[in-house]
Length: 427
Ligand SMILES: *Cc1c(COP(=O)(O)O)cnc(C)c1O
Image (cartoon, rainbow, N blue to C red; front, side):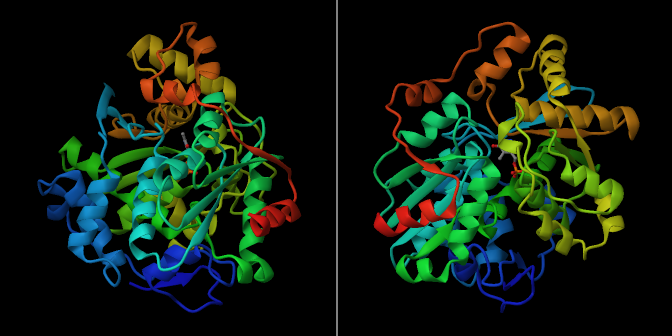
């Protein structure tokens, strides 16, 4: 499989180059030149998650990773449960948060770390900007790997206490930079580092953000997994709480690989550039707004160009597969409370945005849908938001409690690229 850049100004590369480069030299994002198609029989076949993942990912990596090795990588990466929980009336929740950091980012980070470890030839520094969950998943995925340094940038005061602990308590090959700015600032600084030729002559950088194609491939597998669990022949509506749209892009890839999907709902918080784009056909990046679903506070979704290219920049084609709505914090809180009181299910603030999407679709588009809301984080990661809404203390899982007891260790830097550069050169 070759990967082309969305800007079309760089030459196509193989999986290994795309994995380590992250961003293409022309600043574009890598996309596979084609999507291997599997038929319905394939998706109906009885398989384990590891087998399904290997089969779906193999065509994308076959030049560099044998099918036996890929099975090993998947076995080491996907070590946790993926329950599909029945809610009500053909509505389900796919819980993607049972990995070590309790957010869905574990799928991508653990897969990518193992691919890099296997294909690494020289020492590298992984740079990653995080609005909360990516950083901890990457820290967990890469912690202790030889020859790989990880530098995480996160916006000071804009991640939850538990998220911050998960970012700042690893030590070893993991460094946390606490940036006095927003997530967009962090993302911008990381982008600048990749484009700085002078810096890149001095250190070998790689990215673990969802600009990296290796993050997206494993995020297509659980859509097919959920479809298999439902076990009917019908099309399914997936509601995806979205920020940088990496999770959704994984779903779109699955659909292009033949998975029957009726519609994707891209559910956003107040950061609504994508729903506005679908409505008007015009895309205007905006400064990010702070919300209670902070991992989705993104004003310039980095996967937007990928989605456009997959649909040949045709907004009408996009509208056929995708619907997108934005929900305000009060609607998210209402969804948390309603789901808890009426359906006895506790959703975290991100998952609640996705559930709001399903409910709106049911009311406005298709009353008889079979819908799956992707649950992207455990509610225990956001007690400050969830507890006042349901008026109850929640149980914080042991693995989160453990990180609360460790000592925070971060380096505070202003939101300007020169500080990041200085750090990277001198460390
Ligand atoms: C990252 C994240 C999202 C958004 O995912 P994208 O791929 O950036 O759209 C949603 N929920 C949680 C809990 C996350 O950590």
